[in-house]
Image 1 (spheres, helix red, strand yellow):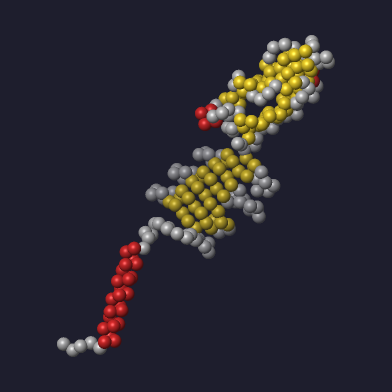
Image 2 (cartoon, helix red, strand yellow):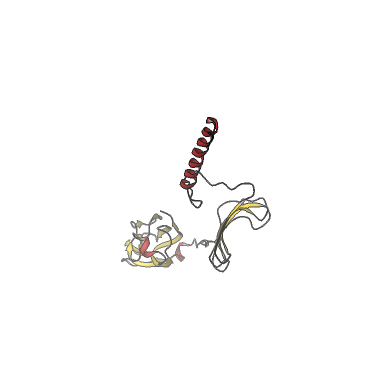
Length: 237
């Protein structure tokens, strides 16, 4: 059998080495469904979709309806749950919208002037400025003159109200939350303005009704003590 030239043998050996290296690289590369480092980039009008077996697109991120880049998350039923995109023509920033299962817009931000677009939040109407018509008591013991019930959604609350007393009368006014004194009493005519935790454990009370009472009492003189709520709202920690 004739011998092969050494240069051909060297080439075959080098080729075999490269095939082995290639085989090793193929067998040790990360799975195609795993990103172990760096980032995944989708460019030039591309998009990412997650589609359930029935064909419903659950997640869409990327180029949207030939005009913008956006995002949409749907429920398994195919109903939209959250979007970050425009729904009308205009050069506005894209609004963040959250929908219920019946396509009602529950939450959105105002992309024109900032702040909250929906929901519309209740605001306290102007209050009576005539002191004699304010909630009042002539009792020398703590007496509830105003009361409200509210569902508890946030851990803290701010409550502000004015106090007053008839001529020659001194009184105190305090707040009870679920029957427990909330903050220190104020002496008329000082205003009460406090922001603090509503309850210690929001987790167990979340969504339940909380009772807020304003109580007043006469501490000196004969006559009435008054209190007029002006502001109450929940806040974050």
